Figure 1 (cartoon, rainbow, N blue to C red):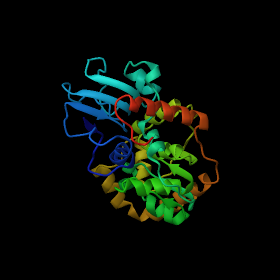
Figure 2: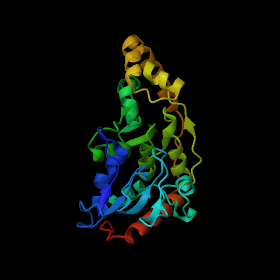
Figure 3: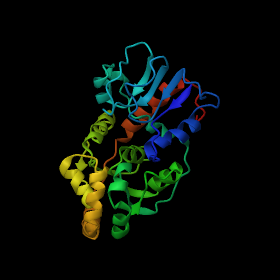
Length: 294
């Protein structure tokens, strides 16, 4: 059984959580490198290009629109549960399978308690790092910066635990804050394709998601906002180089807007919903393997 998740050139908090969470929950020997069976966990990884000759077990994954829709009725899929109702609807699944994102199982990792250290932390989407100046924005605002590309996922989890309020453009920043019972504020992802999956998850947790406008931390951010494009190509790089003298302006304005947002109360799922959904996810996992966290 091969653990399968998105692996890009850049580390990414949500995807890389797969590396530690499943090892903490599942008895040794369950996973190997045999790709005759694929175990699909955290992430928008229900792609249409997964090998048709492999059996695919879906444990809380989502459909993000990053590929065509896979045919989950072709006989090669075994769906334990999916991230949310939008995934279930898109892939013609029973709505009862829309439990929530698999990352909720972090609840059962028995992470050490952490004392609160930061009034506010901020986590951008990992793609926004190369386009923006978010570390400098946080330094300017006196807000703790959590880097979603930090390969040490435990460090990021601890930073979330140590935070009173997380402002995040990264969906898994919100999911892990919610799981660790830390209030969060959602910033609408600059790239439009990243937005629908937020509602997929939030609707699964019965959260009335309130997006806040993401400020522009650079001229490239502004260009991406205006065009709806990722702002990571050659044209964007040329624009950033040509107008680099505007960085201080954008950093100052973005820091002001984050500080204004930090005055608001965060969102969080209700305790009873969180407990219900996490236990449902754990029960599904236990039907496929021995769970060692109990």
